[in-house]
Length: 272
Ligand SMILES: Nc1ncnc2c1ncn2[C@@H]1O[C@H](COP(=O)(O)OP(=O)(O)OP(=O)(O)O)[C@@H](O)[C@H]1O
Picture 1 (cartoon, rainbow, N blue to C red):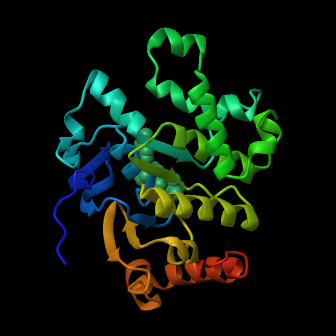
Picture 2 (picture 1 turned 90 degrees about the vertical axis):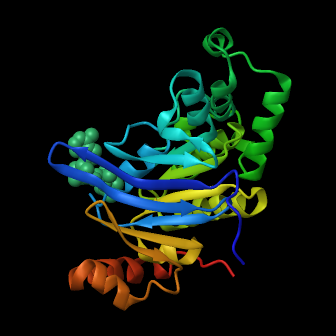
Picture 3 (picture 1 turned 60 degrees about the vertical axis):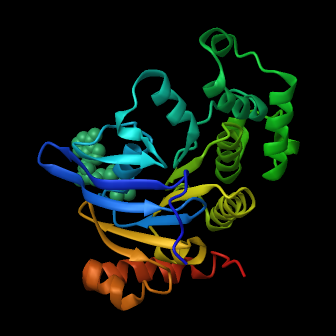
């Protein structure tokens, strides 16, 4: 069935970003349907981070456009641009928490995107916001840690706090840049499962950069494989066979990916 364009579809059209001689992202065009869980894979330097940063407008493209439904994201300035950044939650490899603050306060910081300047400076939160933050922590099984300093948590717990913080932003789309790259396998599984649960329960679109093929195959509805800034493959996990990976990345690439598969296959739990 052909689905009509949703007001929440994300569309990239001829999107490029050049850093002097390097075309980090090179004429990328794709549409992410509302509610999809999309994995972007590729070796270091393929352009995955740059692509996500173009989507949330941390950087501006050299050419092309990003739109969300009927809204032209690349044209936004001032307040509408700040609103878009709030609607576009971002999870980073290094968690981006304030380590000396407690977990609950870190989650509440996610609400500041919805505050004016004064209440933002004063870090004043309503009871409803505290309840929302606790609910988000509860979904991530982190209520017992709510009053603990963020810096004392394990990496996996910190990344789940970052997800809770992103949730209270009430985003329209969740972007995750290598969210499990610094985690041990057990914590990596918990974080991927948390993202998957949010995607399926809330219908939130998730765009996640990953560098291991097995993780992308296990969790993503759709995989986009990049090389040198370009999209070399865009399809389902089943379509991304070893032969296709070999075609895209060459024999070394397949070995590299297979090593990742072999070393992590036992560790990454594939959801039923
Ligand atoms: N601010 C910048 N200035 C100059 N070059 C940059 C900048 N950001 C990225 N690049 C270059 O653009 C290319 C793509 O980088 P990008 O970080 O998007 O790749 P990646 O696939 O996310 O890699 P990694 O997994 O290592 O983060 C690389 O060649 C990188 O060196």
